[in-house]
Length: 287
Length: 233
Picture 1: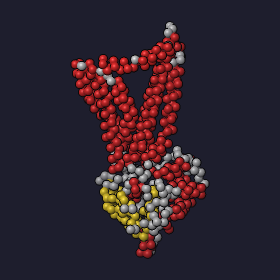
Picture 2: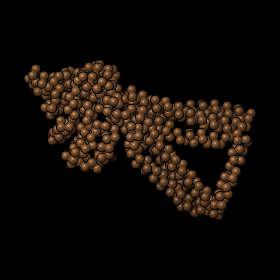
Picture 3: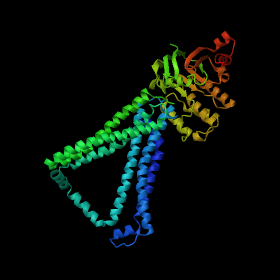
Picture 4: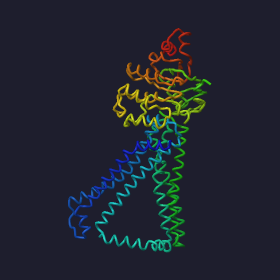
């Protein structure tokens, strides 16, 4: 049944998801276009450029819009996923959702997995857009053979680089990258679980359920930021103390900060998953 | 064992002042068409929602076919709510796929046959249909299931008399004869001829549960006339 639930959840969300991806693609194209003005061309040709023209002003405005649009797309996607969850779980459409012969866990997991995957795809597209644009800009400024040289150097001396980072700075780059990648991969799922949990908390109120869901989300976010700040401060203090006596402690600092952030997100997600489950299992009150 | 639904001490209170269903105990048999009747705010829809797991009871329990309301009961209960619960952007054929995927007792052939009799094209998007046709599509989905219990909340409210006839005909011709049908409505005169038993509710309380024949024999009145007498303002 989980597969069927996910299939229909995917069908219900793919149109908006694809629309967001097309939007990112379009915005990226305009971002690239903005780098084609005389000012940027002069920069890449290493030639002197004296006056800023209308096209250059347009370029700057386009780049600003590019940044805002990318941020808007990311938030737009998360808002859409929240609205979709609310609509299919707690409005008229919920009458069908909650009368399906499936367990509440499967219902929640199907929504979390599909929404998490969409959020991950859109976030990855945003990152790819920024990297792509930066690469295009750097590609225009830095000559091609210089890039080839840099990559060649890195690939030839990769092992030595890792060794130097380990011995001189105490950083186990591979381990740190693994922790970072895991953190990036589970982040979107934690985000949607926290969002769905806040929406479910809103359902515990008899009136103004949407407003209470928003208040809950803001409350949870603020609370997690406070806890995160406290934990980070303690971790940093410990790491700084260690680093003062031992230069190899940078690795433990980097791992501790990345790990503590990940553990906090996972813990919060677990708590809010339980909250959502309890609300739909024990406190469901469809209006 | 002829009991299908067993409700014991069922209460739903939103707060101290708002008790929608108050300590109802009731046993419903298999193979009957039962009218759930009562004025607005009597607790009919609240009772139905609790039977379908859409509301959590404050107290008491409901068992359907010997099972507490949950995954197993939902597989055997066909529920028609008093609102459109389908996404308007979907095509009817997609909704049929959805029902085929989740309900083992759903017959796609039966649904297509009923849609054809109404000249409704399955490739049509739900939002393009009239209100009456949307309600008919929802009813077709429910009645295309071979369920043990059909719970229909206000199936004939808000539609014209011709549509009412169609809906009642659809219910009578398509329900599983071994099953029980619970129909909640205000329009008693329209459904009286199909009912075997009636439940009267007022202010969340169970006022009466008896057979239609009993009302006619004991009171010499139709259900509609007796309802008006019991609930006279």
